[in-house]
Image 1 (cartoon, rainbow, N blue to C red):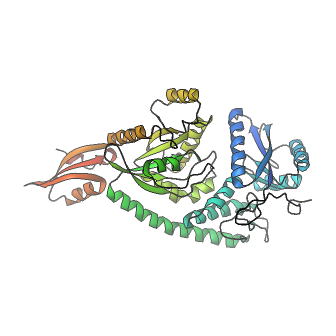
Image 2: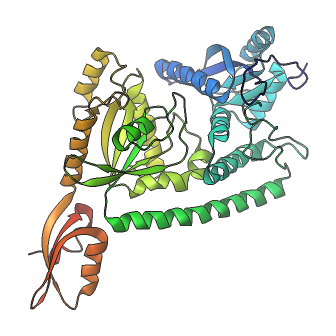
Image 3: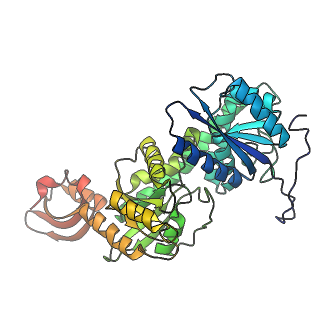
Length: 436
C-alpha cells in the first residue's frame, strides 16, 4: 500500500482545535569514503532535531557505509532492500536521508520503501516554510521551495504542496498556497515574479541601511549556528523582546536594536537567521538580501553554543556560509554562550583553544558585562581619532568625512576647515593627505 493510501497515526493536540498529524520518520545517514565517523554521527543527531522541529517523530536511525554514492539509489540495492523491510515492519511514513538525493534517487527509493523519501534539504526547507511569518520571509521561502521542487517535477498534475500549515508531512508545505502549479513555464514565471518582489523589498531594506550608515553608529551583527542563543543575547543586552524558543530556526528575519556600551558609545545590534551544517544553497540565495546585512557590519559577534560537544564543527559551518555571502573578511569576535549549561572541563578546553573568545550566559547574564567592554575595545581599535585640515575648495572631502566618520568638531580658519573626527581605519586612505 502506498503512503498516500495508508491510514496515518494521529496524536491529538489542542492547537486551535485541530488534530495534529505526526509522521513516523526513519533516519538514514551514509558514511562515504573519507568522511569522519564522529561528524557523521553528530550530523545524524542534528537531523533528528531537524525532523522533530519539522513536526515528525524520528523513531529510529541507521548509519550506513559506502565507498561512493550509487547513482540510482544513493545506497546499494541490498542496503535498500534491508531498510525497506525494516521501515515496512515499523510502518514508517517517511524516510529521511541525511545526504542530498537526486530526483532519480528519491523516486527509486520511494518505490522500494513504499513511502515518502526526502533528504536533509527538504527537511530544512519545510522548517523554514513553517516559521516564515514576514512578507519577505514567506517570499524567500517560496522561492527556495520552487527552486528545490522544479527538477523533481514529473509532468502535469504533480502535487508540490499539500494543504498543511503544520498538518502536512516533511517537504509538503508551501508558504501561502494549497497547491503549486507544476507546469514548468508557470513555475519559471512565478520564480521571476518572486525575484522581482524580493528585489523591491530589498530596495526598502537598502534605504534603511543608508539611514543607519548616515547615523555613523557602528553596526554589530550577531551571527551563529541556529539555537546558539543569538536572540536571547540580543534581549539580554537591549531588552528587545525578540521571540526566543529552544528550537531550531526560531528566528528567520533580522532585528536591529540600539545598545549602550560601558564606554558610553552606542552601537546597533543586528540579529540574523541562524545557520546549520550544509545550509541549502537555494536558501542562502533566497535569503541573500537578508544575510547581506551582515556585510554592512563593522564587526560580527559569532555566537557559539558552548554546551554543545560539536561547537568547533558549528564554527566551521557558520564560517562556510560567511564565505559564501562575502562576509568572511569582517572582524569577528567569538562568543561562547550557554556556559551555565556547559561542562566546566569543556569550557576550560575552549578557553585554551580560543584564548580571545568571550564566554557568557545570555540567559543568566553572566559575562555579558565583560562582553560589552570587549566590544567597545574591539571597535575602538578599528577607528582613528584624527585632525584634518581641509581647503575650502575641497568641500567634497568635508562632506565625505561627515558621511564616513563621526565629526567631533569643525573650526573654520583662514585657509580651510579644521576637522577633528573619528574615522574607521578602512576609510582613512582618502583623508590621509589632509592629516595634521
